[in-house]
Every structure is written in C-alpha cells, then in structure tokens.
Image 1 (cartoon, one colour):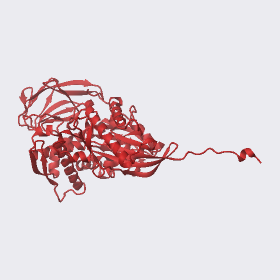
Image 2 (cartoon, rainbow, N blue to C red):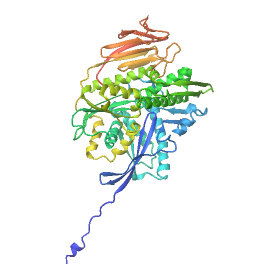
Image 3 (cartoon, helix red, strand yellow):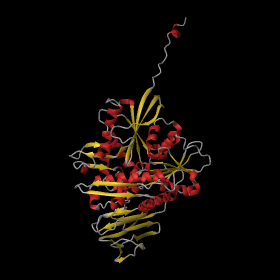
Amino acid sequence: MDTFSASRTRRAMPSPQQKTLFAIDPGATNWRLYRTVYELEGRRARMLSDPAPAPLTSFTERRLPAALVLNRSGDGLECYGETAVAQSENPTHRDRLRAYFKPAIGAHLLPSFPPQRQLYTHGDALAYTRLMLSALVEGIRQEKWRGGTFSDDVVFGFAHPVHWGTDEEGAVLGEFKAAVRESFPESDKPEVRFVSEPEAAIHSLRRSALLPADPSGRVTLILDVGGSTTDLVASELGAEEPVFLARFGGPVGGGLYDAAISDHIAQVLRIPFEALEKDVAIGFALRSVAQQMKEGLSRQLLHSREPTIIPQRTVTLVGAEGEVYRGTVELDEARFETITATVHSQFLDLFSHALEGMGLDESDIGRVVMVGGGSQLFSIVRYLRQRFGVQAILIADDPGEAVVRGVSLEYGADKAERRLSMLFMTGIEPAHKAAEAPAERWALISESGERTVLGSGASTIGRAASNTIPIFSEKISRWHAELIVARTGCSLKDQGSTNGTFLDGERLRAQEVAPVKDGTRIRFGDRSYILRRSAVEGNSRAT
C-alpha cells in the first residue's frame, strides 16, 4: 500500500467573502444612497443582490436633501437632510442653514462664477460636505450596520464629476477624496472607491440594456445633466472594447433653471433682493418650490403638448424678521420659456460648443443617452429630439438614480467593463482630439479692482441672482445687460434696462448690440467697470 498517497493532504480552498457596498452620489440638490451585496472569490466579485435604495430616517423618500444646520459655534453639525429642511423656517436655526454647496467645490478655478457657485467658498463647500458625510456614515452604521464597525466586510463607493479628476491635475478630486476619508473615524477605515459620474452612468445603462454595441461605428453621446453641471462623453461602443473620443463639461445644470424660476417667484411675492441676499432659508425655500413646479410642468409636457392643468401654487414664506410674503404663482410653457430663456440659451451654447470642441457633426451622432436629474426637463429633451430625431434620444429609467446605481455596479464589473474606467482617468488622451485654436480671455474689472473673467458665450448681468454676474444695486435692473464672448471678439448688449448701459460714456439703446475692445469703459446703472483682454493658451484657466 502506498502510505504516502494515502496520507496525501489537499490544500484547503479559501471560503468566499461577502462584501456589502454602500454607494453614495452626493449631488448638488439631493444625495442618494444604494446598498449592494457581493460575494468575493479571489479577484472576482459576484453580485448577490441587485443595487437598491437604502434610505435613512433623514431622507425624503429615496433622496437626502443636500442641506444641514450648523451648531451654534459653527464648527459642527446640528442636523442634516430632511430634518434640516424642516428647521429652515425656525428663527433660531435659519441663519445656520447651509444648502446647495456642492457647486462651489472647484469654483475658484472657473473663468467666471455662475450664481449657484457664489454662495460659498471652495473650502466652505468641502467642509460642509465632510460634516454631512460624517453624519451620513454614522447614520449608515446605526441604521444599516447595527452600530458595529465596518471592518473588511464593507466597501463605500462615491460618485464625482469627471472634471474634478482633470482640473488642476486632479487637485479638486484629491481634496474631495481627503474630505471623504476624513469623514470616517480613525478607528474604522473601510475600503473606499471613487467613480466618475459618466463612468457610473455607463455601467448603469449597460446593466439596463440601454447601451448595446453599435456596429455602425456612429458615436454614442452620454449626456449627464446634473444639478450644477452638464457633462458629455462621446464614445464608439462597438462589439469589442469601447473607444473614447472626447469629453466636455460646463457649469450649466438643472439648478440654473431652478434659480431663474426662483427669481420669478421672488418677484411675484415682492421679496426685496436684500432679503434674498442675506436669508439663506428664503432662497432655499424658493428653490424647492421652483424645482417642484419645474418638474410638474415637465412631466405634463413630455407626455402632452397641451397639458390640461397649468401648474400653479400659492406660496407663503416668512422672512428672518417675521415678514410674510404670499402670492399665487403660475408656470405654464410660455412663462417657463420666458423666465428661463437666458439659462436655456447657455445650455444650447454649451451643447453646441461641446460638439465643436469634440470635433463632431450632427451626422456623427447615432444616439444620445440622457442621465441625471435634469435629463427629464422638457425644454432640453425637446431640443435634442428636434436636432437628432425622436428615436435617437434615450432617457434612462430613473435617470436621477443612474449614477448611484452605476457606482454600485462598478465594483463587480468584469475586465472588459473595467476598461471604461480608463476613459475618465487624468492624463488619458482622446482617440481623436479636435484642434484647439488660441483663445482670447476677457475680464470685467470693477472700480475696486475685483476681476471677473468671462466665459465663452453670453454672460448676463443684472440684479437677479440667476445672472452669470449678479450685481446687487437698486440702480441695476433684474436682467440688465449681456456681454457676449465669441471667437471674433466681444460685444455688449443692453437688455432694456431702466437706468441704462453705457459704453465709454455713450448710452446703448434697448436691445442694441455694440462691439467692445480692450480698455473699454462700461457702466451698468451706477456701477462702472473696465473691460480687459488677454491671450491665453488652449485650455488654461483663470486663477
């Protein structure tokens, strides 16, 4: 008998390990939380449960409002989410309310500051994100993990805008990653992953069979309309691995439409602009009403050209000093188009500049797949359908949740799918890159020396907070003027202002457009500026 063979031992196979993944999409208006369970065998992760919402008590249904109330010393958090919203009209809390802070992250790198990015500094926005994340992590521990430590059994995934990974060589993303990691206690540091929003959207769309291979070779355009930004990613999704063509993004999102409607509601309610400037709670309440009315109108118009019910609402708001503002607001299609005309023009400019910058013609585009909370805005959907055809426009199921669902799926993606992550890494160049001509940068300099660098396209000036350059003065009209930057130069347009727009001392007629040059002196009402021009290279930014 072969005693050696009889006593031969076999190497024990390691038992599979279960991992629970919590995916978080920290949006500008709402945050979302999903939970997925994986089984890990070696390097392969097999999904045991589909990604599903995992709301906490601080959520409003499946969404966590991006709002918090600071403690009295200002260095900690008293409450967040739905609880903070409920406290927004409490006189002892309203001056400590902070909301809609994500757009300010990285805003210091932009050529100009859109109004939704002017509420907070970059550092403030990161601090509020860290405070809210710390509270959310603790809520997950108590409500989803029975108060235990996360250890090796838990993975957290976080979505982020794709441009954070490229701006200033990834500095913004680096600061966001640091804020996330600081949100966990020193004694309990689970595995943390970061996924760009377009990459997450692609994983989600493929899972729902909205992105089958396209053997025609035509371009698939992923359009992510978020609360504060819009990102476009162009790829060829053939039978084999995807080919990244280009990406483009800009600071125009659904939140700008909300801001324009908020200004209209404030005008109907006769709220002084000083109150809007100083009272965060009133601005937050106005934005919430505006968003609800916008979404209600969009739901009707996407299913019918002539809705039977005009969305209207009686709005009552109480100011910080107890003053009451009340009125009935109606929002039909015509009013919406008038109110949001400037914002929508900015979106159209962004989209056209994106195609031009990516070197694409309309004939190159095979399909446009829409994700993000703003992808169900009727005016955007209609524009795209008219431009590319109804059949070419695909809207994801629950588009506002496509990103958080994709963050959940990225962990279990196989090797072929993981190639997608290469499309969004810093330093990866597009397969086809459009030639970029040298640009000219224009800056508006105030009498105090404050410098505002203008982006390409139209920059609106006025007293309303939704303007690209808001100026808070009684002598400034709500929508006073426009400065238009094009490849051929810069021009100034008066928007029918009450107290006039002056170019080197000469008043422009209402709606008159006049060319301007380096050193031109401009006056809006009682505010004076000098316009300056400087040549810049390709993609450089103002600092």
